[in-house]
Length: 243
Image (tube, rainbow, N blue to C red; front, side, top):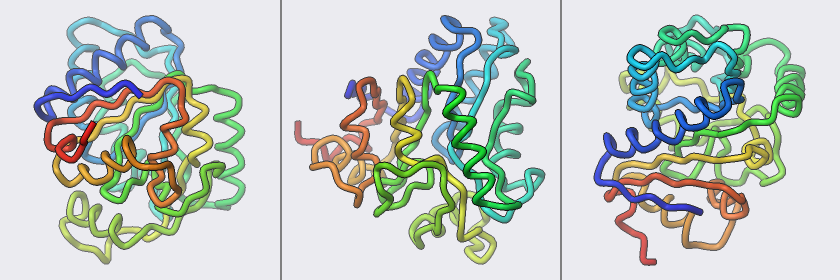
């Protein structure tokens, strides 16, 4: 793992943008694995600003999102498809036929199988990740097998509570209790992984991911076995590291 410790969220986002843009510029038809949540919001803003200012093109780029809530239509303001359009795609020259987000409705087993095939046919050049306070990556909650592929997930109460606070105005009853997520094996197949972690709430998970033995109790620890991982963590998230 390459570990970059930065001062704060802004610096983390700036550094992550440099890495993402390096991939996009060096390989104009790259396959990007993208994430949602609060962590990448500033990164996506910087990517939009770069596109507007410097004309970096996404017309041949394909994107593949980690996950989606189960039970929400794509047009729902809290769906991850909506999030990606609002925070990134609407201001890029990306072909929306090249945008892929797991479907959160329909025949879920069929949708998972289709997404797995899509990922097999389109190897990810760089997979962007955040990390949950309980160590989840994507919606792969503690206990998820490391050989898992795209699957339906029952969300842990801690994840539901975090998402209620961050995205659903504190209304826990509005947060879906299930999601569709790339599995850990899908994530590990990416050629490069870029993970951003900021804030003291992520410090325990960050320490476990980097310094503790690999365990399904902390899904992000699977990244210890990946050959090309860059972790960008701010001082608060790095506060428990001892090495």
